[in-house]
Length: 62
Image (tube, rainbow, N blue to C red):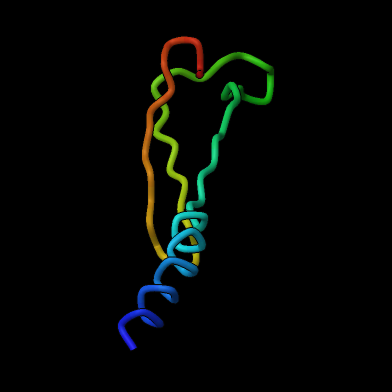
């Protein structure tokens, strides 16, 4: 019985580690004239979980 449980854990463990989800957002924030917009707070939200990440643009709008 213990042998079967250990085998099951060994088969499932790699699947658990492969479930990482990551993302990268890149860009420059500009207004309608194309000028960069500094010091703006950007919020990205994962709708399914409600998890949010916040960042602020720098002087170059990045």
